[in-house]
Length: 125
Image (cartoon, rainbow, N blue to C red):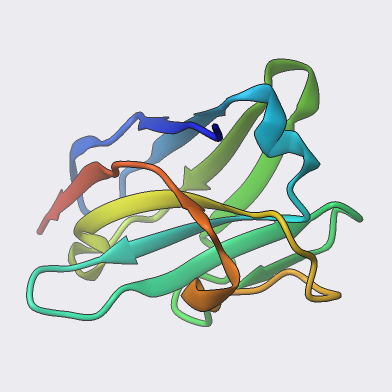
């Protein structure tokens, strides 16, 4: 059974930084894509960043240049470095793993079949 556990969320002022971590069970690392998603209160879940098994990455336009996705295969951990945070980045952040590769990193939630429980990020102005 694949398990994903996020950590690193918290409260920060605008302009600050946070690094989210997602610890994955070993099985998850045969996943073809790993991603970060977020869901703000009253809004739909949106893809933030994704990395595939070829180390290709993709980002939502709203976070390009501010967020960086990376993974440490030795630690079975996915990261999301978030810099220059804005109040509109406030959301519950989820990591996800896809066991089937769609040929590129993907921000489509439907492409992922394993999800963590989420970690809250709150950015104050």
